Image (cartoon, rainbow, N blue to C red; front, side):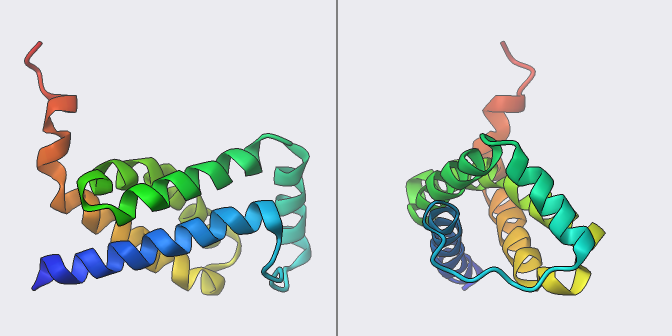
Length: 127
């Protein structure tokens, strides 16, 4: 039962990540209200021209990989730094506005824990 729930959550999380990545390129969702401090931080990110396209591509590719069962473990690892950054950002600047981010981060962590056997060769001492 838990694996079916995780499968559904991974598909939904993947779709949300793809949507978020596409929004960075096409700007079809309205920006939420932000405080001056948050606007300053976001403005700083926008000054680094390559960072947002890189995040968008990572979200799109990671979301696609997360949807497919065979590549789900790879997608979760690819999305982990992005989701960690989003979560830390919300914890530092907008705790109440990060609910969806916290949920998506939890899904990514759950996916990684469920697929830990697939990561074993990467951290194995055998050479």
